[in-house]
Structures are given as C-alpha cells and as structure tokens.
Length: 218
Ligand code: AP5
Image (cartoon, rainbow, N blue to C red; front, side, top):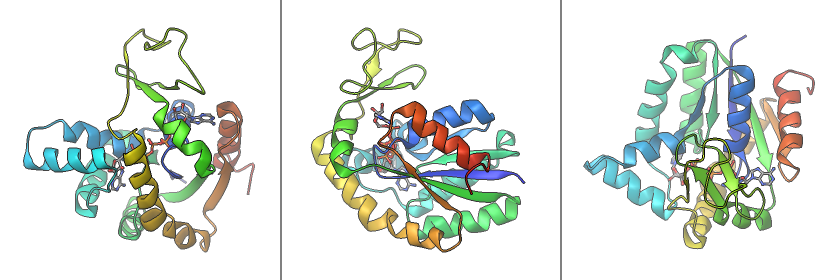
C-alpha cells in the first residue's frame, strides 16, 4: 500500500532532519510546509507579506492557505507512490483534510511523533543553521560544520531562520501546545501513531524511524 508518512513533533524536535534522511532512503519526496511557505513569503504580494509576518512571529498560517499548498504539492507526479509530510498537519482542521485527501488518493497514513524535552528545544532552535544551497541542517552547539558558517557538503554559506530567536521560539512552542498537541489524541485512538525518542543521536533516531516505516516495529 502506498504511504503518507507524517513527521510530527514540537518545533526543533528533528522532523526536518529525519524527513530529509527518510526521503533519501525511500525515494519519496519530503514536503516541508515550512519550506514551501518560506518560499511563498519571499513574494512581494499581500499573501507573501502575510506569511512572512506570521512565520517571523512564530504564528501559524491559515488552514485555507495550507489546504491549497498541500493539494497542489501532493498532486504532482512524484507523490504517486507516497510522500513524507514534515510540518503538516498542525491543526484539527488540517488533520481532517488529510484524512479526506489520503482516502481519495488511496494511501495509508502513518504518523511518527518525535519526542524531545522542552529544555533541548531552545538550544536546538537558536543554534540551528541551514545551508542556503542544499538545505543541510547544522547546529552550532550540537552539530557544527567543519568550517564555521559554511556547509560541509557544498561550501555554501549557512543561514539562520528569522523565527529561530528566543521570542519567536516561545510563540512557536505555545502554538504547538495549543493547536498541534491535540492531534496526538486524534490519531492515537486509530493506532497509527508511533512515538520516537528524539533525544538520541540523529543516526539512532533514524534507526527507530526506519523500524516503524518498514513494519519491524508494530
Ligand atoms: P516549520 O518550518 O515546520 O518549523 P517548526 O515546526 O517550528 O519545526 P522546525 O523546522 O523548527 O524544527 P524540526 O523539528 O524540523 O527540527 P530540525 O530537524 O530542523 O514551520 C515554520 C513556520 O511555518 C510555523 O511557525 C508557521 O508559521 C508556518 N507553518 C508551517 N507549517 C504550517 C502548518 N501546517 N500550518 C500552519 N502554519 C505552518 O532540527 C532542529 C535543530 O536540532 C537542528 O539544528 C538540528 O541539527 C538539531 N537536531 C535534530 N535532531 C537532533 C538530534 N537527534 N540530536 C541533536 N540535535 C538534533
């Protein structure tokens, strides 16, 4: 059966890090709503400006915009055999939309919730740097590049996201608790939600992710 794999977790839990690896291993596209919205935010249009302001402040973008983003992206041919969602769904409305969409597409949904304590999250987010070229994710405290400020893979400069500051991180964590945490109960009752210990090193977390995806862990 074709799969939709949803990476869930608080901001900074490691969804993007794991989704990138999973995409490479399975050959599925990684659909990061945060990345897609950041691209849309670069446009000098009312919508672009609205998204930019919301992201920078750490507030959620509206469900209507997200519905459009997901419908458009998942109808591309590279999603035919399956795809990985990184950062979606984040509200009950979005979860309901995904239930309808996956049903229409004939795909099973499994959810991997990456669990990390709140103490670790601030350090992970304020220390994060991302390659401006290939998107590889580093951390100045936890996973520094070999040459400060530059990507190990292609030498391009690393960037810091506008919402990776203490104030926006606090708002993002609150949005997660209020809007996204309730989804855990929504999915837990259906037996499709798997919890992953995200405190372990990246390789070990990935091993747990693969055990779930390949059905070794039931
Ligand atoms: P988004 O881009 O999705 O950000 P987020 O959910 O806040 O998650 P992050 O990308 O910050 O964290 P991550 O879990 O991917 O962690 P990462 O792997 O990078 O969303 C941004 C904004 O867009 C939202 O605030 C909202 O405005 C909007 N948006 C997006 N989707 C939306 C939706 N569906 N609805 C409404 N609005 C939406 O890792 C973090 C750091 O930790 C890195 O430095 C990494 O190197 C390090 N790290 C990762 N794993 C480990 C490990 N195992 N050990 C040590 N360090 C690790």
